[in-house]
Length: 106
Image 1 (cartoon, rainbow, N blue to C red):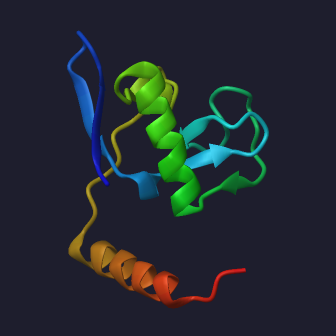
Image 2 (image 1 turned 60 degrees about the vertical axis):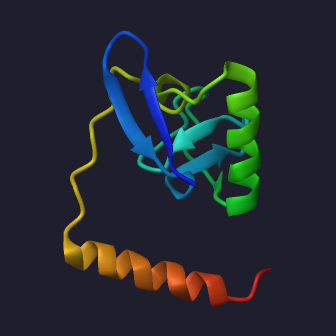
């Protein structure tokens, strides 16, 4: 489910989908998928990417902060807008998501 994120007063808003988020296994903080390490604790190991777990974390963050802002997901000083996907990238992503739905869970 997409949510609009941004920082009030600065005009930096972007659309973030839950499949673009991950949870740090060390501190439990939500991070953008593009972060190479947790922006809170610096962890660069495994991250939780299960859709249901991420959805629950997003709901908790919205309940806690009132809305999900970009500053809750990444370091604003180093954040760069992602390059828009080409049609080939979108098709590849669609096929990967389709196969992921039918892959047996562990």
